[in-house]
Amino acid sequence: MEKSVFQDRKSFHESLIKIAVPVTLQSLLQSSFSVVDQVMTGQLGSTSIAGIGLGSKFYSLYSVLVSAIAAVAGIMIAQYIGKEDKKEVGRSFYVNLIMAFGLAIIFTCISALFPNQIMSMYTEDMATKEVAAGYLRILSVSYIPIAAGSILSTLLRCKEAAKIPLFSSILSAIVNTGLNYVLIFGKFGFPMLGTKGAALATVISQIFGFVLTLLLFLWEYKKQEWTLPFVVRMGKEKTIQYLGILLPIILCEFLWSLGENVYASIYGHIGTGECAAMTLTTPTQVLMIGALSGLSQAAGIMIGKSLGQNDSKKAYWEAKQLMLYGLIGALIFSTLIIILSPFYVRIYQVEDSVREVARLLLIAFAIVAPVKVLNMILGGGIIRSGGMTKYVMVIDIIGTWGFGVPLGYLAAFVLEWPIYLVYFLLSMEECVRLLISLVVFKKKKWMQRL
Image: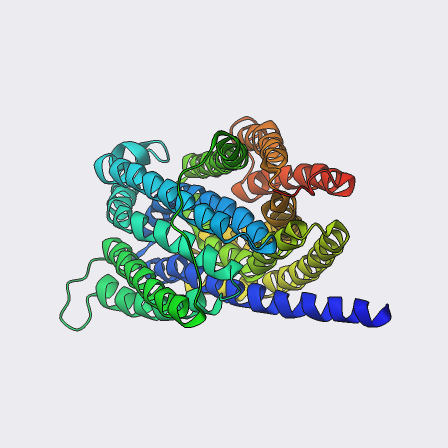
C-alpha cells in the first residue's frame, strides 16, 4: 500500500512538471508581450503608458473570453482522454475551435471599426484616448490567430505535449522584443511608431507564434500517430451538456472582465497620473500571476483526468496539493515584490509622484496576491474540472459585482481616497470569493464526471 501511495505521488509530480512548468513558462512569455510593450513605451511618457494600459483593457476582455472557451475545451478534452473516448476528444476540440473563431470575428469587427467610441468609456483625456484607440485598432488583427492558438495549445497540454506551445512562445517573445525595439524607437531605418509600433510588434509575433504552433502540432500529430476525428454534430443531450458548461463560464469570464474594465474606468477618471501608475504595476502583476498560472492549468487537466477515470479520492488529494503549492509560491513572490518595488519603479521615465503611487500600489497588490492565486487555482482549475462552471459563475458575480465594483465607486468617488487605497478596498472582493470557494470545495459537489 505504501508503495502504491509513493507511486501515486511520483506520478502526480511527474504530470505536474510536464504540464505546469511548460504552461507557467508559456504564460510568462505571453505576458512578456504586454510587459515589454509597457517597459519600452514607458520611456515615452505618462500619456503613452496610460494609453497602452487602457487599450489593453478591452483587448484583455477578448483574451479572457477566448480563454474561457479554451478552458471549456480543456475540461472536456481532459475528461474524455481519461475515459479514452477519442471521438469525444475530437468533437470537444473542433466545436470549441469554431466557437473561438466566431468570437474572434465579432471582436475584430468591433475593435477595428469603433476604437474611439470604446476608449471614450475609459477616459475623458483626449490625448490618452487617441493613443489607446490607435493601439487597440492595430491589436484587433491578432484576435483570430490568438483564438486558434489558444484551442490548439489546450489540446497539446491535455496530450501532455505542453513543450510545443512553450517553444512557440519562446520564439514569439524573442520576435516581439526585437520588433518592439525596432518599431517603437525607429531603429535600423524604420520609422519611430511609438505605441503603434508596440501594437504592430505584438500582432506580428502572435501570428508567428500561431503558425509555428500549428506546424509543430502537425509534426507531433504524425509522429505520435494521434487520431482526432472531425466530429462537430452534437445530439440534444450533448448540446445541453456543452451549453451547461460553456454558458456559465462565458458569462462568468465576461462579467469578471467587464468588472476589471469598470475598475480601469475608475482609475482612468481619478487622473492620468494615477492611471499611468496603475499601468506601471501591470507587468509585475501579470508576471506573478503568470508564474503561478501553471498550477491552475495543471489542476484543470490533472483533476479532470482523475474524475474521468472515476477516481474522486485521487482528484481531491491532487486539488489540496496544488492549493498548498500555490499558497507557498504566492507568499514568496509577494515578499519579493515588497522588497524590490522601490527599485522596479525607477525603470520608468515618469514623474516622481507617479513612481511613488506605483510603489504603494505594488505593496497593496502584494498583500492581496496570495488570495488572488488561491482563487485562480480553485475557481480557474479545481472547481471547473468537473464541469460545474455555474458554481464559479455565481462566486465571481457575487465577488466582482456584489463587492468589488460598489467598493471601488465608494472609495474613489464618495470617500475620494488615493488610488492605492481604492485598489486595496475593491480587492477585498477576492477574500469574499475565496471564502465561498472553500465552502464549495469542501462539499465536493463539483466533483462530477462527464
